Amino acid sequence: MPLETPARIVRELARRGYNAEREAVTLLAGAPDPAAALDAAVETAPDDALRLTTAHVRTMLDADQSCDDPASSADSAASTDATTTDDITTDTTATETGSSTDATLTPTDSPPSTTDSPPSTTDSPPSTTDSPTSSDAETTSPEDDESSPTDAASPTAPSVSTPASTTPSATQDTGSPVETKGSTHTAESSSDTEITVTGDITGRSTGTGEYDDFVSVFRDRYEKLSGQLRGRVNHRPASAIADMPGGSDVAMIGLVNDVRSSANGHWIIELEDTTGTFPCLITKDRDIAAVVDEILLDECLAIEGTLSDDAGIAFVDSLHFPDVPRTYRPNTADRHVQAALISDVHVGSQEFMADAWHRFTDWLHTDEADPVEYLLLAGDMVEGVGVYPDQDEELDIVDIYDQYEQFSEYLKEVPGDMEIVMIPGNHDAVRLAEPQPAFDEELRDIMSAHDARIVGNPSTVTVEGVSVLMYHGVSLDEVIAELPEEKASYEHPHRAMYHLLKKRHVAPKYGGHMRLAPEEADHLVIEDVPDVFHTGHVHKLGYGKYHNVLAVNSGCWQAQTAFQKSVNIDPDAGFAPILDLDTLDLTVRKFA
Image 1 (tube, rainbow, N blue to C red):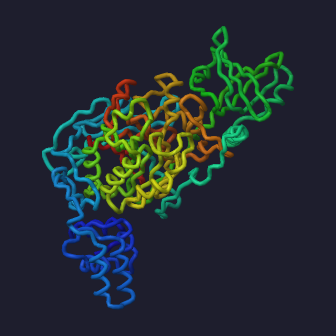
Image 2 (cartoon, rainbow, N blue to C red; image 1 turned 135 degrees about the vertical axis):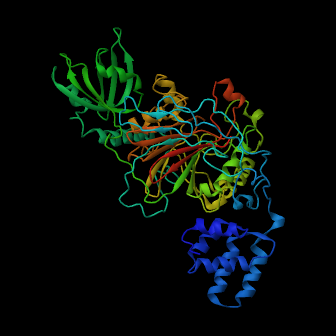
């Protein structure tokens, strides 16, 4: 029995009727003879044990290595460390939902599933307005045209049916798959499967809130983004442009200090660099006037044009954003492996969809989900306390620490060999100002299930050679509010994400709903183009390609709250986008 991967060890343990802690699986996989180590671990476990602990496996391996009375040592470890049937809750509905054997072996403290019937599924995939559909799947082929990118819209009213079989398939228990075609370009070196994280503010926050900190963060923003534009225009600083004669050709890079319309319908954009400000005029008859409504305050852009006769203003001929190069080709994994992208679980809310969560985690234990080795969670693990007016009336759990305790219990339902990466969101118990550092040690101790990788918001997580920019997405509210509905809306959240990629900044506008933590550097700049951009926050499902970057907003696990109803938000709940890391194809599965 070859045991090259932890996944195979988990399956073999499940075949023999056992579950195991994640670190225990890792120890078995790292043993000189994994098959023999697994046999010994099972043989030395008590008859009533269903779960092998890390301490038991470690003791067994140490005893086997030292050869000092191994039978006695293993028996002792098994009697003290292996979990017995008295400590485990078996989910009797697992077979009803079509999960495999290991799905019925719920970890020690996991709550039983509350679903009383087979899961609801969709007969048809989430509908889109931008791509062709079929009865079983929907495929999009995004173009590299930023003016009319092809994308998939979020579902509005997916139909629901009950499966006739308990065996999961593309149209049973998991819903109909929806696919987005990705690049087949392979990374030059993606053999290293270790998860790496960059851009994490955790432990590196230096801001004190002083005036100089705000100056530093905007100066750093300008330096980073202007560096991406300098090769495209012959930039001159504002102070030098002010000294040039009228009629001169000019080019300037700056942060947008003001955008306003003139009395005759033209647009005046005031750009600011480190030397001063200068006004730029875009006349209404210019083609570029169509993109003026996309410009946000504080973003960085470049203009080219001609000075007026009195040299008091620049007439703009062309406008440039930092943007993602049209020639960008994303990296892919060199083997077939998948990652589940989810966000906004909101444990603690009365509207948390526990049944849908159980169906999702049950599915993760099936053979169909065997390639899913990673779970990337983009914030809002819990509902939080005091986030919006009268929130306490909608809470099922009123204590914030109890909310995280319960979330940890739900997280234990995820297969023990899955790698989990989590960032915080605006409902989580971290500072609201972005960038947000990861959870403190007390909350980390509570959420210790699976030894999840907990990082800050935003962070770029590289998995199997594929870089995934994880950002919770609070700035999407600002982008959707400022841009025309046809360019950004809650029904199409991925289109708002396109603009963040275009501006190469996850939160370009300061003020409004956006809280910025002043730091020595601007950690919200998208310095390196990601292969995948993953957000949440708006509770709507949407995905599509922008210049070959896959943008995914993954919906939520919370039904509509009274507050959401009052602001006309109809959430897309119970969806799990599954990403093929080797092709960047996306399959959306529905569990609600």
